[in-house]
Image 1 (cartoon, one colour):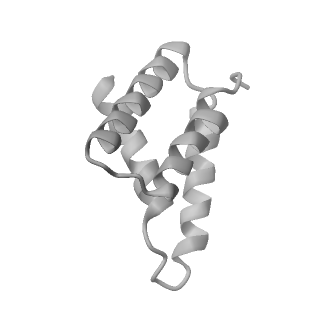
Image 2 (tube, one colour):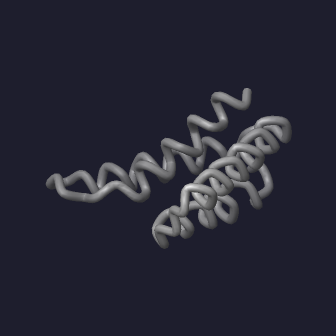
Amino acid sequence: MDTLADAVIAAIAHISTAPDDQDGRLDEDVRVLELITVMLRDCTEEEREALRAALARARSFASSAGNRNPDLVQTYRAIEEDILDTEPE
């Protein structure tokens, strides 16, 4: 489950921080992120813990690599607040 959780966190971070240099890309990115957020709010507690661990690994990796990109920091915070710190619906 760790590999899947790592992939989900990486995908969300990539979509959230990628430059929007293509027409219409931003709108589609927002729709995809909203869909992922809604789907993950219904994950099991075990899945939620795997995502928490993956988020901690991603933050640790970014920190050790010296990546202090404010968009990435905000994305990690949003994952925590919008997905992991919510009660399943």
